[in-house]
Length: 188
Image 1 (cartoon, rainbow, N blue to C red):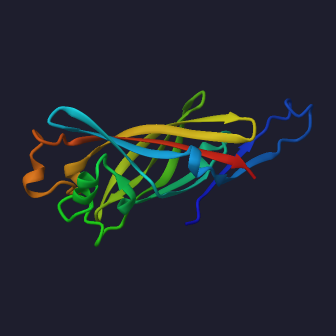
Image 2: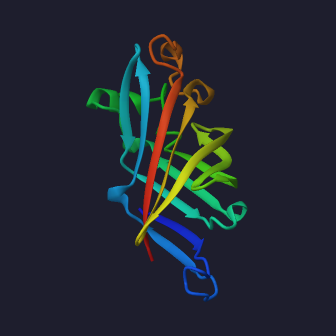
Image 3: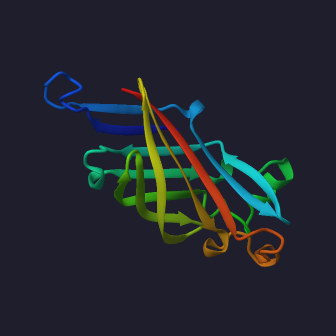
């Protein structure tokens, strides 16, 4: 599976001793340092999980955030919901229905600067054949030869028909699911 993350960022002329600004590009997602995790509540108890396989492609220049783009694709069959039984259940028809909908994705349409290292990616979240507008707040931190894109947002699972039938009872499994992402990319 190809895992790429591209970050183009301007380097100030002052930092380069008066030289013209140059782009810094981050091209390889460091999968071992990156993660996409989720937390749901079952009968009021937090249940943590994560996805073992995902792709991320981001083009980002903090000087021109409106020109940025992002795409994150999750392999829903790679979900680790905390136990073998939970893993078998969550990929089934009432939940992710991976036989019909093997991936979920977020595709940005714009990025908004919030100040400092904080941003929002605005776009479409696609899960189980349903598409909804979504805003993903995130931060960007550069550290030597890598950059980290980190953020979190809440998904209302019933908006995407995740947990159909008896599982639609929010007293058993809460409607809100917290999704956290931490994507680390090495400089090309």
